[in-house]
Amino acid sequence: MCGIVGIYSHDAVVAELHDSLIHLQHRGQDAAGIVTAEGQALHYKHGQGLVREIFNLSDLEVLRGDMGIAHVRYPTAGGYSKVDIQPVVAHKPFNIALAHNGNLTNHRALAEQMEDELRSSLDSEVLMRMLLRVIPAKAGTQSTLDPGFRRDDASAARDDSLFSALKSIF
Image (cartoon, rainbow, N blue to C red; front, top):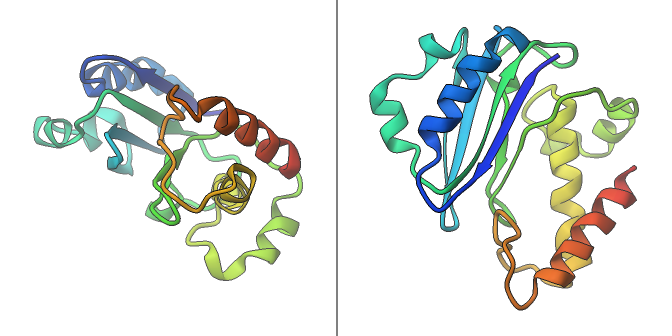
């Protein structure tokens, strides 16, 4: 059982993400993390313990952006180290962050296929690495994709590609 929140706004989202994690703290007391997006840049902070112990005012000032996701963790899969804290983040071939609640039943089989890519024991990282493999191929490009798949001229193709990518994983 974990707690996840995502916010997309025209204003800064970090204060609402932080407040939401405090309200979701009962869903997980092991660790917490926040990722915000400012244009193509991702800003993130995470740590072990309670939300009020992890984040201070100076941390929140650095987490700029109008879009973000946050997560409190109650571990049911994966380890207990700092690398096992969500949201998980990758920067190549494009910036992506993912928060996930649940268990991938085929986690170990998928992890064996990408052992050298993984930095944690999280099934969530396996899911993210699968997305990193599939999304560019389905979108027909290796270029940087918008972190929120915002609507623009190519958004319909990207949205279809994202859902196709997810479908191909499961």
